[in-house]
Length: 432
Image 1 (cartoon, rainbow, N blue to C red):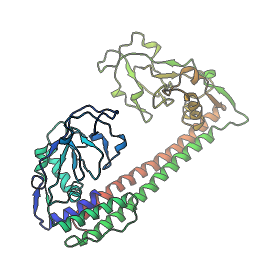
Image 2 (cartoon, rainbow, N blue to C red):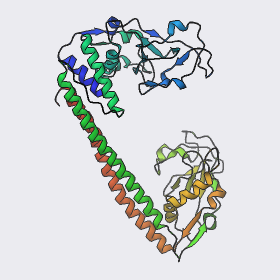
Image 3 (tube, rainbow, N blue to C red):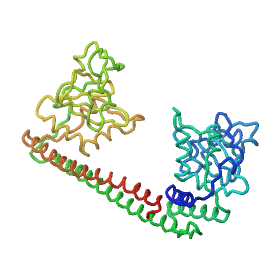
Image 4 (cartoon, one colour):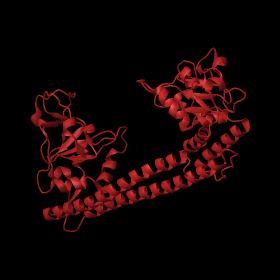
């Protein structure tokens, strides 16, 4: 929608179409009503910035408010709402039909005058010609915002009513096609007749790029599934193996230290769940803590750390090298005593077999969690040490090949991400 709108309004600008400001085309912008919302039907519906999602409002989820002056803020068909502050500053919504509703204070309403098509005006608000002016107005403020005065100064190309309707109708069809409609693009009258071909070409190229992205995503999922199944197969029980619980060959699981972290170097480093990202820890960024008995919580090489609660419950991390550091209370530490290679055990903690057991342990809890007792009862297939080392070497080699494939995928993904902006740039310049 934005690309098609930019093509059309960019073409109008290139041919020198006369411009007018919003102040000339609309009534004075109006700020919304300040009130608290309520789920109880105590008055009119109360539209807020957050109620406008993807250019639409789900009226069933819009709350109510108490307003003695509702006539002054009442929404009517063809009103256009603007988000005037926050991350969505400049986003717009064209009111087509509405229940008894008013709008909130972080929105601005404009009402087009009779000689301007509201849908044409709304179409302009999707274009880069509009957004480039909004970006200038937002510059220099800590919190992005646009006020009524700034909004009124925005200018746009103005054409006759017939062409306004044709542009609005054309862009609505573009939106419908994005939502899955098979209706053909309508013809555009002079001087925009050539722009229909350009928009159709953009749609065609965008569809091919999206298809390529889909294939790339599918390939990535297949690679991940292959790694998972290969890993699980490597740990499948053989007749010469035995099965043991973690508690049989590890020390009693240890919970971490409860303490507030600090940036001041007052004690050891203090490893928290949030410091472990994608199986890595940037020790330079890990804070410190004042722990009076660090020996109990001190991390050593080959310690295994587990997240015991929250969204990452069950995730593991192998300490291979670390500074003087202790670990926080939402982590559990495991130390292998004998018979099992810690590298082998760490690889097991990446398998579906492990996660199946962890998932069983998490069931029925309001907040997902795994405690030391549950962790100690996790069952692990135990082959001879030589076989453990062979499995680790096999999985490391497999992971290396997968990493190469993922690196190539990342490169092609970056190329695809750059392709569409390049296509649009040519389209906006009229070069397609």
